[in-house]
Length: 475
Image (cartoon, rainbow, N blue to C red):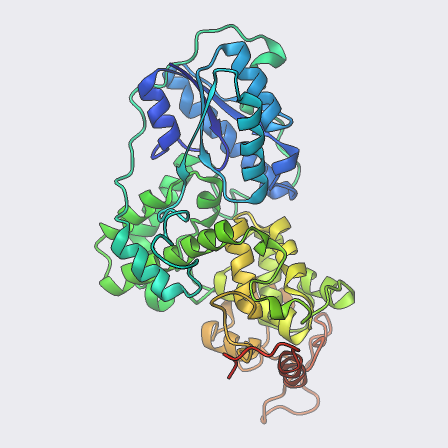
């Protein structure tokens, strides 16, 4: 049996079902295609991550006498031609979630019809199969909690598969461009040179090291400390999961077997379930990347990207906790989850800008961009998701900062112009405490707030209440 293994969002050898089965059945040609119609890498830092990750995958195949073949172009066309040239029997891959992935799969199946080559798509690279989670129900789940309870009772996580014992190459001669390029010969994009300095190590081995460090030093206390962005209290596995450098099954197995407290394990596993719920929603609602799941919100906020939006992207809104998060994103390609929620709430509710504009910005800039998770999270904050925050939940960034960054460690790290402010003012530099006089030093290098938080909150509530199709579950 000769198989082309089509790597897409699963850049690893361990717990890779398509690769494992193909390697067990015969010879394998590992392939990755840089398809402009499927590109998730517009930002230089993310392109750099992908380049490094592909090179790492290529190196991991070398001990097996194999290599990764890198092509550029339309996936369905390249795979059809490649299967003919290497006389492959099957093309194997995980199923894709986003509409573009699914369209490419359908196009490839059509091209292969009658050719004698079989397209074998394994299940989704998920913990809970999104195409099976609704079985026995009249429609898709809308609420997270019953979805999670049902999935955890019905689907017992599969034991992660090991790296195949052998990954034998297909013994054919492919020359020059026919063989595809070597990932290790690809030039690194100019942007994103700070990956190593920021502790990011792309590739399967880097993902494993990151995970083991989390289990050894950071999972203890996860439930109580995960919301504090000034601390290292989260796994920071999201970019590795997005690239498929570690599987969600490996993560769940490791956490479940860790000596962490039950509360810490359960909180982490619940966050994994939210990630699964996002994938489930995208499978059943492919339009959710740009359209609200609750249709009555479609006309809530116009998508406008004026000066206020530009200030938000640059971390210059005059609201420290928001700006710290946006600057962290600009500097590192990553943002703490608490800061993401606060920054998103400020954009959508205080500034009145469509969640779609924010979703698109994160899609361009996040190293850990995951289409389902990103869109579902934005819709949750905006209140237009199926199980979203209520419309009246408007996060106050000053109170959020004081609660989760009480000493201003996070703000001072990313907004050095505020570093000398006392803790009492670090999250609201425009305010004065009673002991200060009018001659107290200002912060001339930091902007005034774009909006008044109280006034903009009232305006947001009015916008939501004025929806033509006022939802009955509003309070």
